[in-house]
Length: 514
Image (cartoon, rainbow, N blue to C red; front, side, top):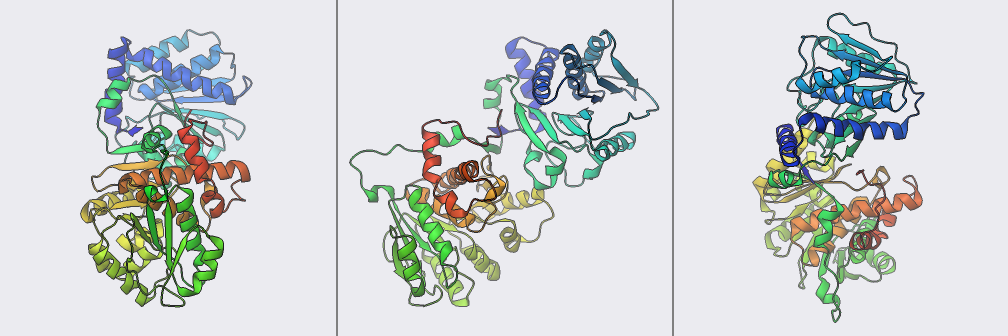
């Protein structure tokens, strides 16, 4: 699913009206019907609902939604239309006309002074002040209204986007001056700003509502931002053929583990094998032999000459993928070994965890990364590599810059793990849950991505598919065990199930899509 800037969304709306021979008012009615349906599903007709509508088309959405609720028997709907400048958009004015002919409505058109209604924690506010067409920060009375709503404790539903939040970039905006939604009902396509941590308290839960926008126009318009769905991943999962052997599905070599951190190596190797790789070899400290052979008997263990850490990252056999980092520590000898690997590695390479920490201690290693190397930092590791960043938006911009500069693939882990390609293409992941914030989950991701690299996937495809399936395996684990009780091994154990669900087109748990 593409993620478009606000200007492109207006193009899509216009193309929809033209292709379907409807006017913009009918499209507004569709949006209002979809929003009304969602509200009716959540609240009884006895619920007190306060609607605040601005002078533009977002206000028109709110007025239309209010009218539809009243027509469905909601008798405690209070509506405030803010027409401070004496000018409404055409569609907002038309929706106003439809609304005011209803009997016994509680409607106020605010043109000058405004005395806000009482709002309490038992009330619902529908926010339709400003949508994604907003070009600058809210000012004056609208800021005071937003703060009043936020402080009231009422349950807030924003239509399209919370008022005051921009669809894309919000780096210099004050979030307390925006409406903070508990639920954001957006139409058909998400906004880029939904995927940044700093906006989470503003957006709340968000849900896409289908209003049948023109698919031809959506496919025609270009975008560098994508949201990865099952339908994006399914075509890449190749069916297994009869008359094949383990070597047909690739061999992955892991430089992983050190004294006290052999669990990271076990998790990476086991998740690799559970993701379809034919062979997996772990190169680790000699002292990890018993742990690896006991916990992952399917894997080959290649002992390092050192008892406690890795001192040599030479590649002695042919492998289709090389991964380094889980649990290796940052010993100087290990850093030297990693440097030698970067200089000689010809197979597709993935670097995670301590490999990234080693590079942060010796930054010159960044310039040695082979083309299309995949790195999988969490936020802390990313900032150690590329400098401190104040926001997710700022960090993503840096990731795009660094992926292009070093010609690498960056998998920036988070709630919406984002894969950034050297081409500037950005892929947000739609699977996963807070239960995956557990020790070893990143090691499992390393194993999953490495497995697909070993099976012949291009590194950029292996990263995108691996992240999606890793998150889906986590969703399956959460559905079975709960977010509190799941561990990294629970995620690894369900990767095969996740692959089967995609191939068999089964219903997925924890989907963010309506």
